[in-house]
Each structure stands twice: as C-alpha cells, then as structure tokens.
Image (cartoon, rainbow, N blue to C red; front, side):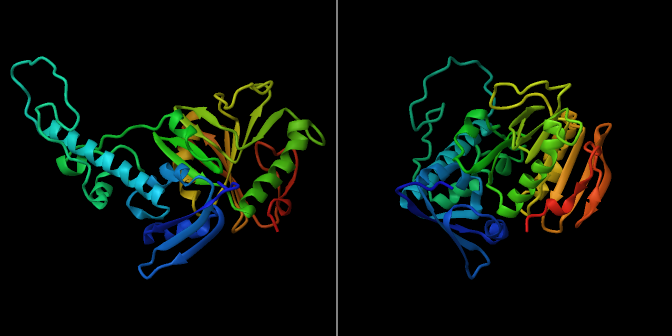
Length: 332
C-alpha cells in the first residue's frame, strides 16, 4: 500500500507492547521488521507520501517513534506539541477559581491565556508532549493531573476520509480505528465464503436467492461506522442497492474473518454494536485454527447457535438452505 512512482523509506521504532501486532500484519511495500534489544521492533517500508501516515502513527501514541523521514517526524512532534499546549491551557482554565463578578469577554492574544498569563512556547521536549496526548492520538486531557474524567474528542467522518488508501477505517465509540489490509489467508477465506454464498443466495443459482451480499460494505448504524468483511441483507428489507457510498440500513447477517490484530475488536466492540443495530446473525471465521462460529441475536445479546471446525460440511443459519463445505473456505 501507499506505493507510487516516487517512494521514500519510512522507519518507525515500536515499543515491545505492540511488537506482535506490527510483526503479524503487512503494512507497506518492501516491508521489513527487525527486533531490538528491548523487545520492540523497527518497521521499515516504502511509502509514496509519508505525511499521509501522520494520523496512523499518532494512533500508537507513546508506543512509536518516527526515525525517518525527518518531515514525518517533525509533523508528528508538532502535533504532540499542539496537544501539550491544549492540555496546559485546559488545565489552567480548570484550576482557575470561579469569578464572583461577571466580566466582559476580552480578546486573548496568541500565546496568552484569558488572564494574560504566558502560555507554553511550544519548545517543550517532545517526550513530555507525548506523555500528555491520548494514546490514540486524539485531543489530550487533564484528567491524569486533575483527577477528573478524561475529555475526549470524537472522531468525525471528515477524520475518516483522511485515512490513507490501503487502510480500512472505522469509527467505533468515537475512536478512529485504521486497520491494515488483511493477509492473503484472511482475504482468501472472505473471498471463498462470498463465492460459496453469492450464487445460491444472491443470484438464486442452485439456491433460494433472496439476499444481497456485499464484500466490506461501510455501515453507518447506531452512531458507528463499521466495516465487516461480508454483510448480507434480505431483499424483502433491501429490494435493491442504494446509490450511496455506505449503508444506513443494518444488515441481517455479517461475517468477520478474525486475525490476531483484530479478533478482540471484532468479538467485543463490533459485536456489541451489531447487536444494538439488530443484526440477526454474526459469523466469526478464523482461518488459523479453521473454525466457524455462528451467533444468533437473542434479545439484546448473542447466543452461540453452533460452531464448526476443519473440513466439516455444515448447514449454518441463516443460510441453512444449502450445505456448505468448509474445505472450500480455507485458503491453501
């Protein structure tokens, strides 16, 4: 991803806590991952426009340091300094006692607070700024210092549109989450399953039809932006595809293909919101151990309807009208 005619080398130093995630995924062209003495890793890859990685890098918070190129390093450090200044400004405002007598609002000159106090110049050490900013790269808060609940800026659709091509972007509980493209084994399982279901259920060839099945649709439901690997709508609810870049009608079925980097998110936050949206069934496929889990919505939560493994031949709701041979799902 991010490959173009003129590429630059990007080198990022990651802490030990995220080293496994970095090793497990393909992040860019010409990627290499080397371990260091502290248990962390150094990721090196070729990128057409390194500055497009700014928001993705900030998402790792204090667990990443930009080694090269210098332009990306300066951009990230600048964002951290901006966050530090906002934290300091908010902290001063929170500590100021309430005024007994109303005062007329006055203009605040750049570099000053409302009472004329000098604000930080922005020359602070970048490590201090990193400590002040939230781990996911969003606006910082003074909760650590003041003992208050953290303030949080929810991500917007405009934020999502800034995510570089080659990443899958979602907004979950106000957090912008950018995930790399799946591994070939992951993509193979999703593609194979789509190939098994689309003819009989999408086209009515050898099956009952009556479904619209899409690969990685963008869903805008219950205040979230979610991108499952596959989703399906009964045609009685969606007679034809809307001419829009995303769907606001919750699907009847979704499938998530699990990977070490996304399994926790898929099983917790995403399944929670699928239930809130009224999705009838969720399938979880794991190409590693070659398992298929079928969940049925039961009230406001999920019930495990069935589970299969290996080369089973199964009839799995809501597509029990045909027998599905799992051998065809696992990429060899």
